[in-house]
Length: 157
Length: 393
Image 1 (cartoon, each protein chain N blue to C red):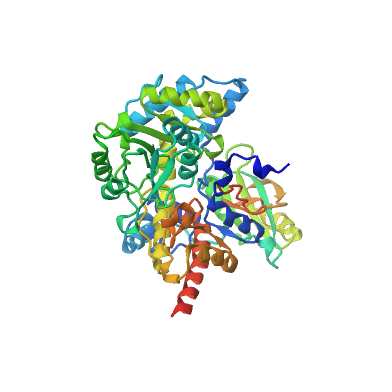
Image 2 (image 1 turned 135 degrees about the vertical axis):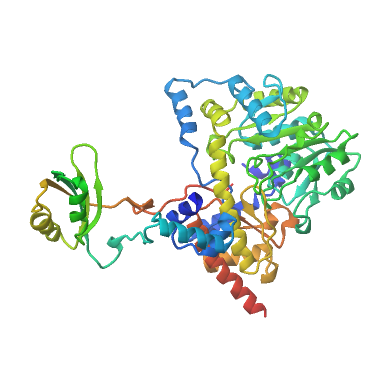
């Protein structure tokens, strides 16, 4: 199953037939394993890695460091759930070190994100402070290089 | 000066490698997807690179002994025994070379005299013929065929042997076909050679890259064969170390001694930094090889299926990292196929006849590429094959 996951992780669009060939198992077995992985929650979703800069849609992304006061009973999860619920939020991680939650947010403009932080995020009860870092360029995302093409330096012998 | 009159005649008459020509055209074009390169797409595993870096940091920048660092020769001896069961004395039977190719050159020049015949199964890597000629000998091709899964058969071997036969080249696992020789096939060859004085140059540079359960069997490990075998291998393919230029030869002491003499005059020693890195590869690199082999294996299955699916006849290669499909259904020669595929679909593969006349009708496709890259190349190739077939019918 590890190998199947690795293949899907590198390219989720491989067909069941292609996966079966590469793993040397039957297509039925591929379908069975994928169903089991989906059911157990190991596979959460299938997504494309998109370079929005190559499209007409303008987006701005920021990574926001949140310091929060964990609440009695629910700890960090209660606040994480609140933050997750915002549709602008792409990812939420609980961090070790100098701050508590790392929140990745994408909007259409700097103003969008500024207003999201000022009006919605920082006003949550448990949030003590925020530090917003705007992403200037994406060089690599989800294992995919965005900077230049992957040059093949190999020559022919 | 008229250089043409000044060259060594033998070298002036050698044909340049047929692999290169298409590469030169491809280089001029945009958006070319290549499946033509015969070296790993992986970089050298970092822990191996690190040992090279460390040796530089410590200032180990001198020559090594001619035959190579003794620690490396010991590690090679250990590796060969651990994986293939042969015993070679690191002091007298192991020589570290500048790539496997130097080993091939040394072996030929050390053994061959004017008039000797060297048997070379074809299709095979491009260097055997020219090197045999440079050593003054005559290279005699033995045709291997798709219906025999491109193996050398005892029958074909027997038919090629003459009183002048000095050396048999055994290029398995094979570039370009991906053919391998299992134990029983090697045993049939050994049986033909027993009782003769024919020596064997066993080029097992792809030995670590065989697929499908059974491990590679080295020719030298067969009963009585070690005494007649020059075992050539290296680090390039197994450990993704092509640029380090490091290989090795294992052979009976008198042969190794003679080859070392030549090596010492021509090369002094193999690159020192590479040797330090290679010790790490031999001693702690098995897992890396397993990982890369598993990766090649899934690409291999993927690409064979794609090729068969588009209607090309393709025998199942069990070694190296090449497939060698027939392009007969397109009605094109190897060269036409490669040329038009490049011009019309911008996909570069190598014509089979670059590896010997009997490679005509086939092309070599390398799977040293990511699945994404292979998928796109296969999509374009499928279109091309379809168009060719439609035109024919």
